[in-house]
Image 1 (tube, helix red, strand yellow):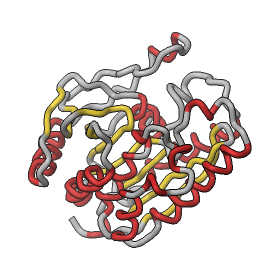
Image 2 (cartoon, one colour):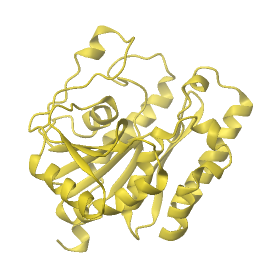
Image 3 (spheres, one colour):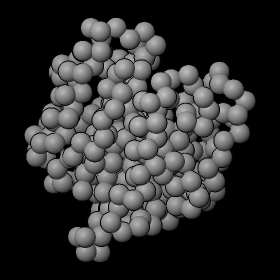
Image 4 (cartoon, helix red, strand yellow):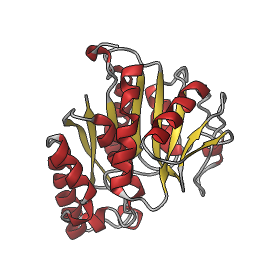
Amino acid sequence: MNATARQPVVYLPHGGGPWPFVELGMPADELAALRAYLEGLATLPKVAPKAVLMISAHWEEPVATVSTSAHPPMLYDYYGFPPAAYTLQWPAPGDPALAARVRELVEHAGFASAADADRGYDHGAFVPLKLMYPEADIPTVQLSLLTGLDPARHVALGKALAPLRDEGVFVVASGMSFHNLRQFYSPSPPRVQEARRFDDWLKHTTTQPRDTRDAGLVAWRQAPGAQAAHPREEHLLPLMVAAGAAGDDVGAVAWTGTLMHYPLTAVHFG
């Protein structure tokens, strides 16, 4: 596959719970901006992808685990929402051949791997993908994060996946650049300022050359406002996988917005 056909890598914010398919009472203008960004992502690849590899913040396993079902079910991994939240559907096919290829690549890179034939699309996956591909016609495989959430291991995991980009696979890393649920519903000016400092760091770091970028991401806990933005880092770790898969492609800040006044950022590579 020639270089112009190489698929991009994106790190995106997936919003909250079953939004936007269920009303959550969040500011309409903020959510409209995020929805418009996610809906536009389907046009990002210069060549239509053959499949999506999704790395969601909502799946962690001891080893790199791949969804292998040809027809993945839905996984409503949230609670306390109206009944409509538990009837949402995104019936995209899986891709067992791609799942096998993912396992081959990660094992070649020294990672243990496993298959999960029962894993469904969690909301970190189906919410953005339902907006990107409403016809549910894009084969999709999910890859788990690794328990322990070590950033260096996730950059290395992403590096193992890089060849997929030249095989027609659109790598989508779904998380949130700010994820402190306690603060979302009690925004205070000092906390918002702290979050903005972290967001500024993230934008600067992801747009640096590869070695500087990856070293910065591995040391993310030293960034200003890091712990306030991510008391637990599972929503940031998909970014590490995306950066690893990006290779020498320099990141670009593709979208910025807010959710409950806290900053959110999406980064594209390639």
